Image 1: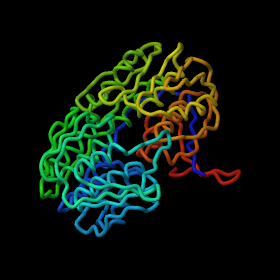
Image 2: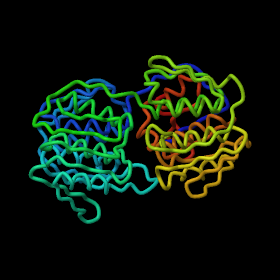
Image 3: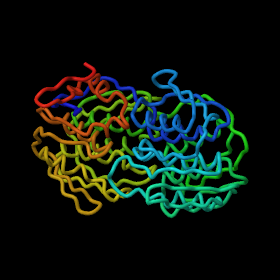
Image 4: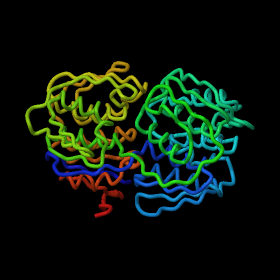
Length: 430
């Protein structure tokens, strides 16, 4: 069993360079299916989700190869099937982008329902609503496979009943080669949606309004190959910013877009952390004085991101006073709370609210990652504690964080990845 072993109690210091955005990469890589020529995607994070979606494209027949650690060459012209029903597909949530890409390019798709982090129901009804509005027929087969088909997708008007990042991006993919104009209202506005639109437009698509709640896509017949660089990962950046604050450290976070981090920076400033912005970097200084409690309400972008909520919960454990988190995106994202309680945290959950009584003594304990961002919260909590914490289920963490051990070590953290066999342990990558 692989685990992270963290000995905390030291403030972080130094610099960390942020990788490409996971949530952009796992949509842009399937989007290459729409292209009529090969593409090169750069600033790709070296994480397991990227490896999975790359292998899925290879199963479909695409030629996918790594040029270097952060660049992929993808030739979609060799794709020979629209069926993506393997265990690889079931193993990641973002595999549903194959539906929009295959439907847009070939007029049909057969894709297994996705997996990924298990912290709530992830309905794809809004995705299917969009496909059907474009003229496709959809059906659920055996409760596990979605089939979509249409001879000719035709531009339409789609109003999303809820703000959905996945549905917005999937409909954008399918509409990029539909005949006529598609308008998506109540669209999500996250930075990775803008990045997907920019990628599509760089290939010759006509997508306008990304970043607002109304997106207009005029379909085109041909998309040409490009070399494209993915945006930095705002959630990875927010995670290291939280870790610096939790350990009362001072770090510089490089290769970021400060505007994408405004809601996170605002909360840290409210708590008393000094944030200094540069063109493509932030300095996070939590050494300037005692931190204050705060309340957080997660919302779709540009509100506070749900994907940074668990990390802030770990941070708020260390701050005296009562803090309240209001989770407005997912119904069941507090599964990680029981793990923090094992460390001595005083957190109670009432529906969508988590009430944190911070500043209580914490102790090291064996904990597990219940999902990707919860795993990051376990690392942050472990870094706060004077003691050694073992974190299991680290496969969740490695889905979305590139070189997490190496990056934290570079900031002075005592963290290692070990392989346990019975009573023995062996450090990996030492």
